[in-house]
Length: 430
Image (tube, rainbow, N blue to C red; front, top):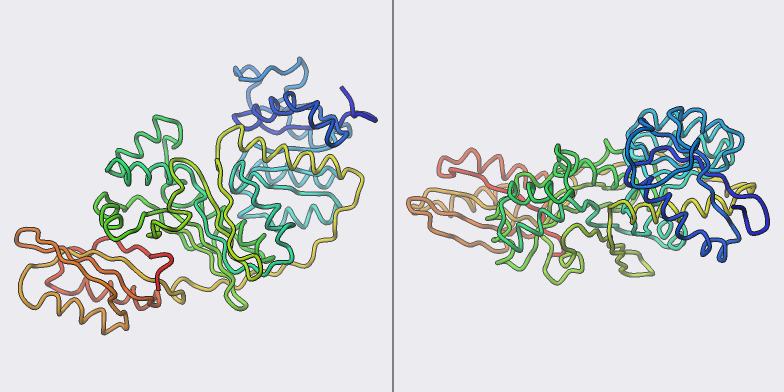
């Protein structure tokens, strides 16, 4: 196998799990089409794995597999390195070594990029080679390249999206079937959408890492995972889902990055989205990203955000890009400053809140007084009877986060309030 007009581009693959195996298959399946479009032939020359004896879904020729990943990233015969092993180490060291040896690197490693991405970008720039990472954020959905290239001349205001398929599947089940969080999570685990330990997904860590990468690319600043305000979905109840539906909303876990003057706001949290918003229709394990810019207006990218083949498709796109540019110096990167992060306390939103209170005269007035004392205006309120208690449901006008948090503290202190329920931010309101 070779290039149409020369030798093949030899690929060193680090990891051969679901994504790595799917990539090998795609390279084999698409070899002729890639050659016809690009005059390139890709050859998976060496593959680093933890256990060569493990049964895999892909057949590899004898001698390709190795447990010595370091030998791949320093091998002069390897043209491009693809990293799909995940985690911080040894991926960080292997990628740095590959870059220092003049090899472009393609990675799908969101955790690594969200924490030490600046270090790796600097290493790539110093070596004069590419570091590509389309698959790190939204699986098979093209997002990084449109943000970095197609929208390079656009003043982006906000990028907001559903970037975790596990949580979207869980919330879809809760919305459409009335499942509890635990029931929906168990189904997600049975179907392979959720890990045995689902913490990274349901507590927002996965989406937070992706939000950091999106913010860095969209706004040309350095944002790390620790900059991201994060809440998960484990406290969302079936009652919250039902109240949202009755009010004309669906609940989604959103990653939201915004440019605010000379600062960047980056957050992940569940939110109530109006049923007529495009993100409200994104179901099951699908992802979607909504982009707002001054000139372009509103765009939405939608598709499968995870899975072996969709993610491998994004990796393959980057691999072809890197192979096409072998021997060419990449565009010199501009200096990237550490972002000034606007704290969540300084942001504003509408809010949904439910309370369980004593059902007696004067309670609603006392509760409303706490809202008013902290400059939070109530837009709508409902009351439900619960025997000797009542449930109060509120939607506020836009208020500052610190004022809403002060309101919560005041409500907790009221002796007529038995339980302060879920607080959800509302998207697309006032």
